[in-house]
Amino acid sequence: MARAATTTDAFNAIAEPRRREILDLLSGGERAVNDLVSALGLAQPQVSKHLRVLREVGLVDVRDEGRQRLYRMNGGPLKPIHDWVRRYEQLWEERFELLDEVLAEMKEEEDEHDGEPHGGADAAQ
Amino acid sequence: MSTTANHTAVLTLPSDTQMLITREFNAPRHLVYKAWTTPELVKRWWAGQRGQVTSAEIDLRVGGQWRYVMIANGGFEVAFHGEYREIVPEERVVCTEVYEQSGVPEPEPPVLCTYTFTGEGDRTHLHLLVDHPDKALRDLILETGMEAGMQESLHALDLVAQSLR
Image (cartoon, rainbow over all chains, first blue to last red; front, side, top):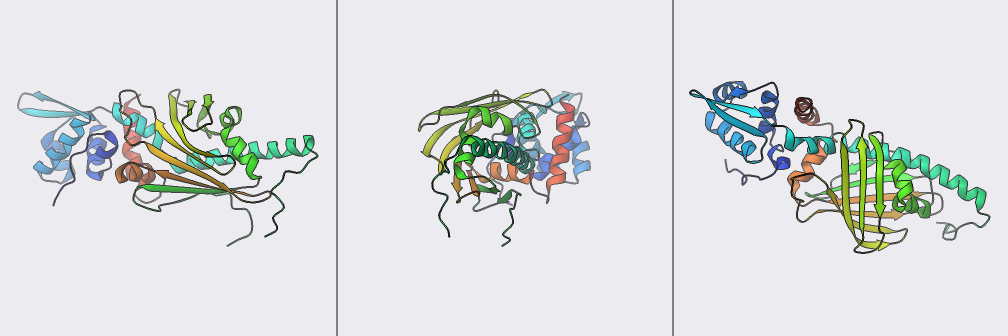
């Protein structure tokens, strides 16, 4: 399988479901590579590739302990994404509902203070 | 099509890198536009239920900047800014939109938003087209707003968020 070019930001790094899975596993704490390999059910080279992408964007840190390579999640780069994208659509709906209220008030005020109807509203279609 | 007011925002995908949000409002166009372009009014709706807008700056002219800041309920600050590229009063606004993240370079080209207001009388239709620099970014943003595949990624992100506390 041809792989897309390695990405350079957290957005792209976590757009890949397997890499999200790795973060999911690491969010429970530090884990060794072979541990991740068995948990994911992927071949080691694939896991290593994904880990390299995650390392490049700063989402995981690695350290060697004896003969083990231990990976640890660093959620920092994800926090802004999380803050932003979570329930994106719902956020808009919340905004629009508040905007409805603001508009209702504006209409009332306009009706009270404004004897003159605004132009442009007379196009009977 | 129903003739009753539909107050549900509809999100669709016109192309690989675009997102379209549409919504109807029971108010004349000039008021909707005003609510969208007046700082004191933007402060009342832009944060949704997720926090308080602490600052809204709008320099409504081509080349002018806008910047909104909110304190989210979690206590962290969220800020967006952008530049107006095109302005047709009460009809159309085109601007860039950048999410401010410390230490993260701004995407180049930036996300571009095109707001189109149409309608007559007491009804206004908003058509908000968001152009992203690439599909991955669009899909990531979108995925979190859609049902399919959403749980998995949100679960991961939630765990991440928890780990940051």
